[in-house]
Image 1 (cartoon, helix red, strand yellow):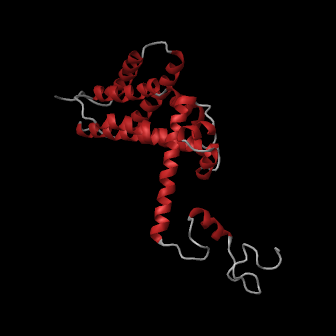
Image 2 (image 1 turned 120 degrees about the vertical axis):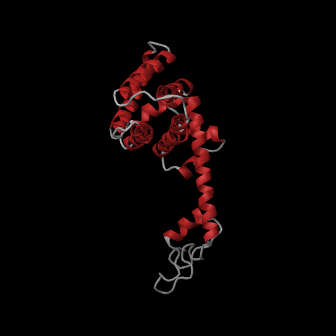
Image 3 (image 1 turned 180 degrees about the vertical axis):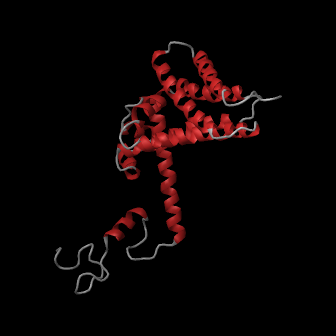
Length: 247
């Protein structure tokens, strides 16, 4: 039955067995673009719609995974994500090759959808002086640990593992460079070179992260006291570079 040339994959093959045969690429397209026969041209509009559908569906599953982490904690299972999304595990694996890829997507979501927007949003708000701006930024990071403890523990547990350091570095860089640009402009306005602002900004980001992580385990002071101490240290360093803002 297979050797007779009339099998499922034989198509309209010629005597050579190659012309008109269904290729691996055709079979892949049957999965990616259902309803489009092998060998048929794919309308650009349909391909674009299907690509957007897959992107949107994947994003929905990432959001469900974030909720699963909130409920189940850092050691969540794929079953937890499926339950949160209201689908089977099979559906999850249609969009993620394995759990590691799902974890990467959750980490990226925590960074780009939660942490970075909150911090940069506070940094963008006009405030009467530099200390108030710094206080708001530091408080936002500490509040995230308090308000989203499961997500914080998840991010800390997984972000340092092999292959994920790039995401951590990119997140740190985005926040530090935004902070450095703001304070670099302040230095320029004061008639001073802006370069030290970036050194200071990276130092502040590292200090806040390490101190906040230590505090998350020790709870040796209130969150408000931690924010005040970190703000004072960051502002003190800035004060060495910059004269007070004139009213």
